[in-house]
Amino acid sequence: MLRNFLTVGGWTMLSRVLGLVRDQLLAAFMGAGALQDAYQVACRLPNMFRRLFGEGAFNAAFVPLFSSVLVEEGADEARLFARRTLGVMLAWLVFLCVLGECFMPAVLRMIAPGFLQSGERYALAVTLSRITFPYLVMICAAALLAGVLNGLHRFGMASAAYLAFNIVGIAAILGGACFSANVAIIAAWGVTFSGVVQLGLLLWACERARFGLMPLWPRLTPRIRVLLRRMVPGLVGSGVGQINLTIDTIIGTLLPAGSVSLMYFADRINQLPLGVLGAAAGTTLLPVLTRHVAAGDHDGAHAAQNRSIEYVLLLTLPAVAGILVLADPIMVVLFGHGSFTEHDAMLSAQSLRAYAIGLPAFVLVKVLAPAFFARGDTRTPVVIGIGILVVNLLLNLAFMKPLAHVGPPLASSLAAGLNVASLALILRIRAVLHVPRPFLARMGLVGLAALGMAFGVGAAAWALPFPAHIVSRLFWLGLLVVGGGALYLLLLCLMGIVHWQQVASVPGRLKKRGGRAKGA
Image (cartoon, rainbow, N blue to C red; front, side, top):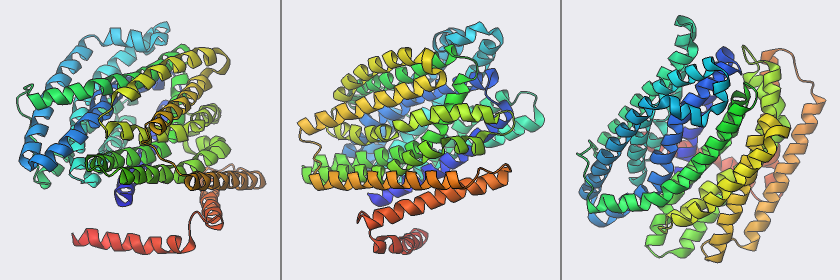
């Protein structure tokens, strides 16, 4: 499980790093203003439907069902089931895409009402959204293929294919900057083309796995009906999450121009640990829990759940501490250049701190939700999600005026904390989540180590003046990050959470695994 966790996490980390480069280019060429706001809203639409129809609800319903068919009836039946599912999904997505293209102006009036105050920003958002919207067809189909590969325990390519989004995006932005007067238009076409590339890579990966998945004509077979019934609660649950994001977008468009951009770039930094750890934990945990539950191995399920919690907290807590201490220099060094000024970066850092407060909760939701999905319960997270939706809306309305661009991030963080607390409480009541006292004490020590690291990094940042030159700033920030990581590891070792022998053996184990991978 750890190996799969690291595989998914490694590829996701590389994707996030490339995504950071892409975002730096977006900031440099479009800044924080009306143009950037319009582009980000256009990208949010297909991503909203991707998360709604392609990832959360679909994976929660499809992966356990596909895995059980694969184990109980063999590869041929599992392949037939996947091909029929792909046919039904494509038919629905194409219909949805055509509908969106026709009614895009009305859609933008609903999710970005603040844009109506500026006719130019609204018109640009409509144009960009029509360009990016077909991305949802390719990326949702790609999510199905990735789910199949995960069910076959081929986590590498399923995660690596998503690099294409950022690679193609970087090329499109640079091409637009060199050969076009409107970078946003070329960047939007890059989004759609990246979906074609990702889908092609995953189709190729399935062929290599001798599991070709050309879609069949859509038919609602009994097994597809079972899948759809299982998806409905998940769709409602994912819909609640997407409504939360839509509320944040609506509030952002009603704030001063540039607020959507400020929150977006802050969220991109927050997504580095969240996307890596959350995606790795959620992707690898669900199949493992499903197998343990199907075999009646409840102790194994508890152990897998607790290992995931431990892995993510070991890495998330220092990330939170580091972001809270270094938010300002992080945003200035990474984004404070070109059209995105240092003042914009400092304002975005305020949003980043608000997001970081909820980072552990955001990640733990992805760890706790599979405990429900693996047991066929997609209803409970939905009921909780509806309550969280109401809380998020009320907090957004309360924070909108006094906190401006900090309001939506803070509302999301507080709502996520309530979400994870509710999920954990219900799992405890059902005796599904078993957390021994020694485990809690161990996690408390991890928290103390992260706090000690924060004080150390803060003292170093105060003692070492922030340089004026960009190269010196990069070196300064890198020194603090590496030094903070070393201090955190030292504190973990001193507290007995990690042993020196484990740290010393890591390079050898990685080299050995790399050699086995090459030999295979």
